[in-house]
Structures are given as structure tokens and as C-alpha cells.
Amino acid sequence: MADDEFEPDPLPGYAEGHGARPASLAGIGTRRLQDEIETYLRHAIGSKLYSAGDRLPTERELTRRFHAPRGVVRGALARLTRDGLLSRRIGSGTFVNGASTKMQLPSAEISLVGPSDILEARCAIEVGYLDLVVARAREVDFQRMEAQLSLMAKATDQRSFRMAGYGFHLCVAEASRNPLIVAMQQQIMSAREAVGWSTIRRLNDTAELRRSQVDQLQEMVKALRSRDTSLAVSIASKELEKFITSIIR
Image 1: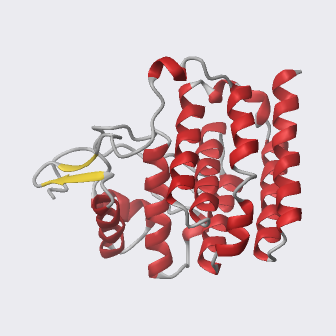
Image 2: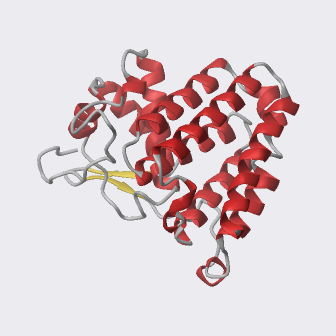
């Protein structure tokens, strides 16, 4: 891949500033760093931060942004290419493939979806698979969740916070070890973006509200790690109920 043929698009910014690797990724092992870069890009594609046909930043730019060895970045891109999410074109770069292999709602049906519909779906789906996470999650899964929570805590604007939150929930879904659940979670994230979720600013429009959400999710991760399904379900349900109340009032 030719690294000097185009100016790469920037990655979403966090408190560490331009060119800095997110602090949650600093000092972690090579294998885990590759997992984190893969998770970030997978989530960015699933939530339409990068859409079909978009060209990703170059390997050199990703290496600089994450302060990662080039081989680690290349490994993360290779996994996503193997899974059909990316295509690598010699002399042009790495591009996002179409979403033919992923669940997608027809545009006509997306237009009928509202924020309350999404929250109802989240209550049914995200809460419903937590028992599988309790049964199947490994330590590396909890580390990935914590890395995303750290990104949420350091986000300096609502969009960065929201995108890191998508990454967190995708990590939880992946810990279920069920590909259909992961696809459903990606569909929820896509629907949230499609229906203008970012316009509902009162859900996280202050640093205090964002901190509260991170605190609750940290408690949920603790419950999952201790294999306490009831507590994890209770925390997740209460947090979603707060969102529903905020929207309907």
C-alpha cells in the first residue's frame, strides 16, 4: 500500500490531543493493542463513522495516532480484511467494503425508527444477553471494556463520548461469543446514528452526566467480572430506564 498518496482523514479526537495515542491504550501489550485497534476500527465501521467506500487512514497514520508498531496496525487491518470489512488496493489504500454481509434495515424502515424504539430494543437485546457474557467472557474481554470506558471518560465532546460508548457496547456483545448478537448490536449502533441520536443532547450534554454514565458502566463491568448476572442486569436496566425517562418527559 502506498502511504504517501493521500492525506488521511483524522481519527476522532480525545483529550490527549492530535497525534497522541489514547491514554487507555498506552503501556499495554502488543497483542492487546492490536485487539484494541481492531475493535476501534470495527466499531467505527459498524457505526458508520467510516462508511462503505471510505478510505481509511494509512498504516503510517494509524501507527502515529496509536503509537503502535507498524506490524501491530497491519495485523489489525489484516483481521478486518479477512472478515470482509476492508479491501486493500495496491497503490491506493485500504477501503471500507459494502455492508452486504451485515444486517441492515431498509431505509424506509429506518425512517420509522425513533429514539424510544431504539431504547426499547436495547432493553430487550443488550440486557438479554448479559447472562451469556457472564458465562463466556474472558479476562481480555473485560480489559477491552475497560479500555473503552477510559476513552469515554477522556472524551472532550459528545461525539467522541458517544463513539467510545458504541465501542464499549460492541465489546460487551463480542464477549457473548455469539456472532448474531454482535450483528444485532452493530445494527442498533447504525440505527442510533441514522435516526439522529446525536441530536438528543440532554442524555450526555454535561461532563457530570457523562461521568455518571461511565461510573454506572464501570459498576456493570465489575458485576460481569464477578459473574453476578442479577446485579449486571439491574445496573444496565436502570441506566436504560433513565434514558427512556429523559426522552419521554
